[in-house]
Length: 208
Image (cartoon, rainbow, N blue to C red; front, top):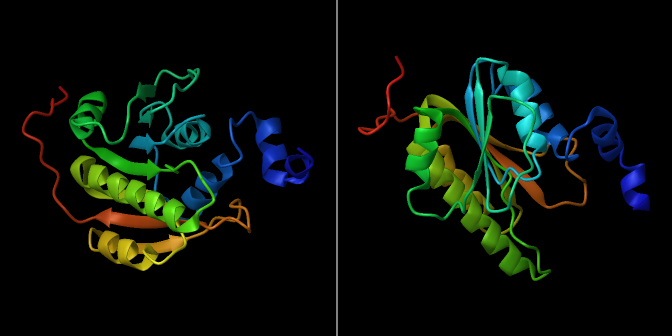
């Protein structure tokens, strides 16, 4: 608790009403790389408790839509264009469900998914890699052409391979560690800008 009280981002989150200090990680990434814009449709994987949903909502404005997905229940947020879905990211048909909820493709896919840390680093790293690859699989199915992605990873032996594989999907990519990320944390984020594939889904609804 003492460490939390000294954490500037923890204090700021409490003052400004964000549900988590990690809200500032996304905020910093958006300011630097503009991966979310007004009117965007955004998917947030591993959205609980909702800090990233709050930040994304501030950027997209009333014309956009944010869909938060987590295996845990997310407490409702007072905004009409935030939708919440209690669902496992490994569930069959999750991409179709996302497309149905958004009524079309997403402009940005976010993933702050993380495993339960057990302290055995090879196991923790392997689990994080698996979650990151799952987030990429979902992104491939739901992202619109030129869409963006921000996906959490951990430093470790598989990081470079995941980065290289993910980079093939985007026009520009890099790894980044936001200033709000704790210095001692091994987390790092893959940023992909400009999804290369053309989006097509034969069962998607088309807005009038």
